[in-house]
Image (cartoon, rainbow, N blue to C red; front, side):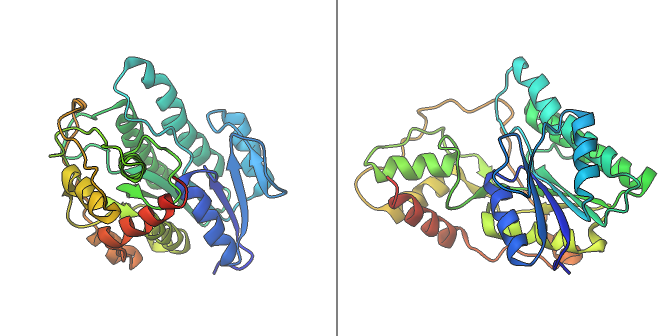
Length: 293
């Protein structure tokens, strides 16, 4: 299916995007990677997707058969100043891209959603969550009104080797413990849903290849959430040594809720289930960090 397929991957320098671009290349796809930084090769494109004209020009130039939209402004900041940039980067970019591919004959469009999107009528917990939820709503509209073959993968908390943001929980706790320092955390009672990065890449590949995914919003995570405390303690056990996490040293953020992922629809539509246990994934992650601390 992938041999010679023109695949457009936005956010291709990101944690998931870089791995997805590499996997697609290994499968034989002709990958056109997009980032806001300078291109790194002949199939790299520099584009600001919050610019509608630039996005339309990119799609016209590449003529993609499959589109993976992972470019995003990922932030948990709860400040009014975060609203406009997350709106442009997460909603505006997604709408511009879907508008540009409408009527082009693209086979599949896969958007990266988020486990942070509110459920059951809840208010969004952050500007990021609000923008992601709005993008999902627009994706459903583009599919229903104009038959754009778009699906949304609501991705849980992704972790694994190579995570570029040292402030996120797993790299922060891991690097701190490897240095013999005690990471300072909240109470650790919040339940979150983790998913290993290579399992996420597998879900995106399956969604891009499957015409059955169009119109669906699918959770990509693990069935049972675990507490921050359990996760950090597990990392500490893997690392070993005397340092341990300190709980209650940091205040919890407003509207941080329990995360849950219903993976049965993804199993039914994509034939996808996560295959990497938390213990296995964290062990691989610690091994990667141990070579760099």
